[in-house]
Length: 189
Ligand code: FES
Image 1 (cartoon, protein in one colour):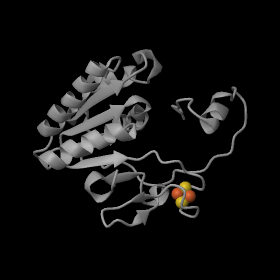
Image 2 (image 1 turned 90 degrees about the horizontal axis):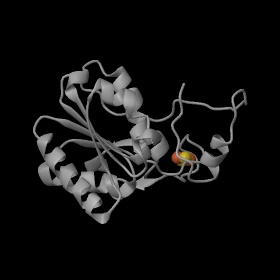
Image 3 (image 1 turned 135 degrees about the horizontal axis):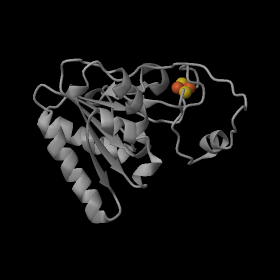
Image 4 (image 1 turned 135 degrees about the vertical axis):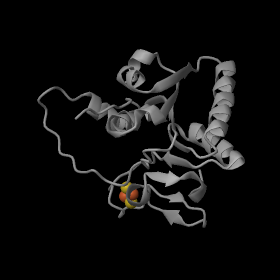
């Protein structure tokens, strides 16, 4: 098993301190995953460490020719597990170093989402503004989009309500047990 993490807080810094041979307790898998539609052209939209879930997705997908990966990132490409993925599926990477780059990425997401709106499937994982952008274009073009939320989770089993987001009815829903993957038009972002 391989874990891809970005060291950004207490939890991930403790993970980053682990050494080979250290023992940890873990349980899972918890929650749901992205839809797999073998024959549907599928666009994978990844922002930063949001690339991580697509590594396993690509490994398990039975029809790699139907996948395309679009990856927007801030750190150098060597920081991400992109190499093996780019060998398996068509991929496009854009780095964000300037405000102009950011606008270019936003524009490109719009172009890509429009291309997959008719008969396609779009899966997205990344920072919330990145997913919001994808959602905005998906709603605009009538595209089918799933997003994988990264809300902080404490219990993972639906009990603490620390992870909730709002659904399209304006009601709270647990991301850990009802997600983390949601159809983008069924939740608020
Ligand atoms: S993490 Fe506790 S309810 Fe989701």
